[in-house]
Length: 382
Ligand SMILES: *Cc1c(COP(=O)(O)O)cnc(C)c1O
Image (cartoon, rainbow, N blue to C red; front, side, top):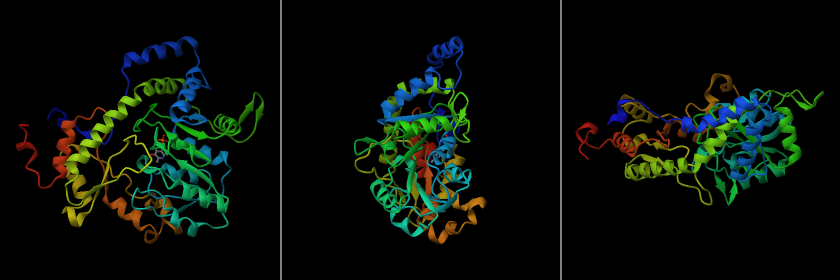
């Protein structure tokens, strides 16, 4: 009961105990290295590469700069095929590189870019595909790679949702030419702000590291108009500490997700994503989809109902990126061609999910969603 007196948001950042962080701060104050590939930065890169099961990783100030830089690393130009069903930064990274986004519809099962619709969108100007592993579920990786190979396209995965996910026994960031991660406060693993690019070989890592540091390839040598997108030592220290708690956090998330599934599974008109085969989950999000005709009220009505009870779900991803005025004018933004994405955006709500969310609150959220349940506040005894 107490918990619902305060607003419950879709997420709450996981933080270690402050006491645990102090020794790291002390070390930074002692050695006076604040950024530029300092000792914590080096340590976090090493630990993350191991944990994620990837050969090379470069840390960034945030995920958006990692995306923008990834496109520079591969010298992507012209047109890039991408999904409208994502966080807006995915498409913005193309815009910042003067690349024309070409939106392609998603598939219904996991809300990821539909490979069967990619070929029709390829033109002589297409140079790459930028799919997103939405909610941490892998895209149809083999199919996308086949198309990329045939047409000579690069593949950059926006893997912002899938920290620590394994697919077919491999870290998911091993697929495609590059993958980018976000360590933003709202993500499963956070460094307050932060991000990374994962790549396959040392030469590419070197180029990435030049590009995120103004293009410096030596004291007086600049190899390209690089940017400053380096992660600092405070962020890196936070990452080292967060990684120690990651497993336990994912376990807590799992318990919450299982509770949601148990309590919501009988409700007509409410569906959720199934777990893809051969893939582990990081339990980053718990989206539900409302079929208004079966459920009785619309997704927006449910969203308001929750809000009135201090529960702030988020409609990820509504509106579609292709609906924002800056992108709406593009030919590929035509809603007729993005039917599944449109429908999904109208039906989705992501429910609150974070390690410290109590099961009691989860039950109350489920009761609010169950329109036939007895009133929440007359049912307080048990
Ligand atoms: C969070 C997110 C980003 C952006 O990451 P930041 O670290 O916040 O810049 C990009 N793409 C997707 C899909 C995201 O969810």
